[in-house]
Image (cartoon, rainbow, N blue to C red; front, side):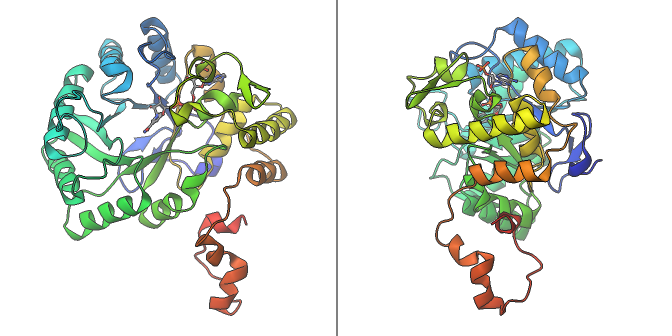
Length: 366
Ligand SMILES: NC(=O)c1ccc[n+]([C@@H]2O[C@H](COP(=O)([O-])OP(=O)(O)OC[C@H]3O[C@@H](n4cnc5c(N)ncnc54)[C@H](OP(=O)(O)O)[C@@H]3O)[C@@H](O)[C@H]2O)c1
């Protein structure tokens, strides 16, 4: 097991939160396995990416029942079977997406849907257990006690090994962990959230919560869907280039709307830093995210082996402190209420000026 500051490759493994699960610092995301969503890759390319990731020493793969309408899970299940890698791979998938718009229990986080979704995932993935089962998105309605009890039951039954929460409010995470702890149920292993140099809003609540409860964060879209590779050009108030953000430009889904004035400022500084350290922008952006507090494993995507190779090379260098400070400064989230009250300059009102030992790291930068 290695320290985050000194890791050098995808085969330096870390414990995920307070579990005994050892995972690579870069997890392979497979949302791009299959072309059904308009921006993925065909089966042969997806297979080559998967095999290359394993050869490099990676052991952590992420999918979801809904990705490319189930094709991602099918391809992954096939590749794992063909390479005989099921024992080595830490296999993660997700439930929540609706499979049948006419069925109100065909999606969401209720017990009925979790059991339905899990059976489908096990079948497509050709396995009898999931190593890490994610709640994909908070559904806003299912009683939390039902979610935690169901996932704990599945751990006891051996159908899943651990569970995590993706795209939930921080209060929901802390309540889930507290309910689990007080009722002697399975703890939350990990959090999966959008986190990158262009999306740092989770630093307000989720990161301090994860640190306080020793829960590992797995950032998704660490390259901002490709923007932080530096391959897109600014064009008026928008942008252009080749890749997902171009293909999905007309989509109303906010995750594809990355060509904003603020994001272009971040890209500009990123490219300056990349030139100074003589590394591709993608490696600098990934290096930055892997060193953030509470981050255990960042979920990367690649539509070619070339992209994957570039991204796997993101770990074996240090960004000098003065350049890292520039990246922090340009990408820092706005300081808003009530966090203004917790700023060290205001905390003197509480402490009389005495140093507080346990300041959250988020505030230390300000
Ligand atoms: N929980 C959730 O709600 C959620 C949401 C989204 C994703 N995820 C997970 O996170 C994973 C990663 O998300 P993501 O794919 O958005 O991650 P990302 O790393 O931000 O973007 C990956 C995309 O950027 C482009 N790219 C990657 N490396 C590149 C390089 N070196 N040079 C140029 N372009 C490069 C490729 O797209 P193009 O070739 O098309 O440009 C690639 O598919 C997903 O597979 C999924 O497992 C989870």
